[in-house]
Length: 426
Image 1 (cartoon, helix red, strand yellow):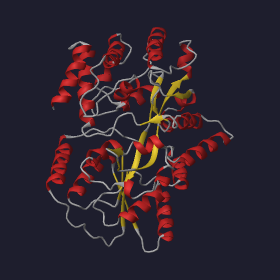
Image 2: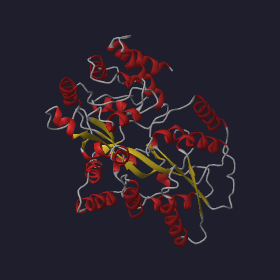
Image 3: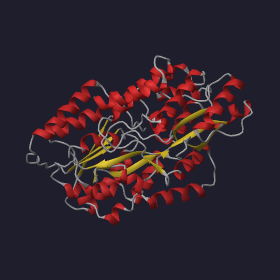
Image 4: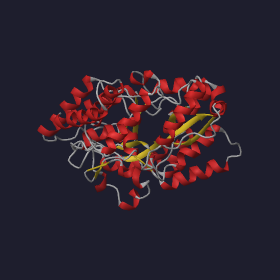
């Protein structure tokens, strides 16, 4: 359900460049009036959650006479190009569901409403502080947190038992030892993690967890350091020792799920929602699966992926848009959606109620246990990759140089240096 790091096709980025240039060169014209009420865009939530949204929209309209909401659900793969086109044409919806990484591409160009001028500090403080901060760029808040996921480590208890290993690794240092021990005893790989540019940002996040600063305050590369070289070396060593599947260079995160649910790997780094899919596709594997906290580095940092609601600056209904976004993301509505969608809420009160509800469940299932592990990480979880323009280009540069070092085309030190220079000179 959550695809917070998506493949960018050349055409989309050309369009982004056009939009950015347009925003800089053109003075904002008068907003286009709409007689159709608030327009609200989500990403691929129909038909599964049609009833949920129909009900909350009906309630909102009843509580706000004269305000109507038109809900439009957009496919994942179409959202970025569609919202870019709408922003450039000044036909953007009044409220749109995006993730901070993509939204920040236009936040830096003043495309979104500054919510600090619209939402009081008291209301802002109802949301998890680190999550609220994830949608802030240069002191301007451009998004209201909605639903969340944190990575957990799913592990195959049967495979661990076969290798005479008692528990899954909790740190990257432990993962290195675990991978060697598990591979020696079973001939299988401990886990799969992708190094394909444009796919999962898990490896990029791992650098931050290992203590690497990606960029400095001026946006220049800050990873050409002993910490950066050590982090690059970690993944290069695992690959060159044959402890990662060779296809980590060519296959995406979907392959990680396929390997795990076919019993070929012992660990899967993913969201708790993945277990529902595994139950459907591989019930035997699901029965022997359990969850532990996500693997982290010496910093102890844990990731969270955020979906938020954004109000475009050119809306002619800013007050209604903010009011509706706050209604969708209030504790009651978030809690209900989290339960239905197997995700996590973003208000402090909703998280506490969510955990309380899980503890009171009479039947302890693997899914309930995974949800609890996921939710318990929220207090310390944060968005590890900063909101900044061209973050996908930074990922591409780092992954390509990591790959070059993994296949021995470059030394690790040269790969780190080349990545830094390429980023700084683009």
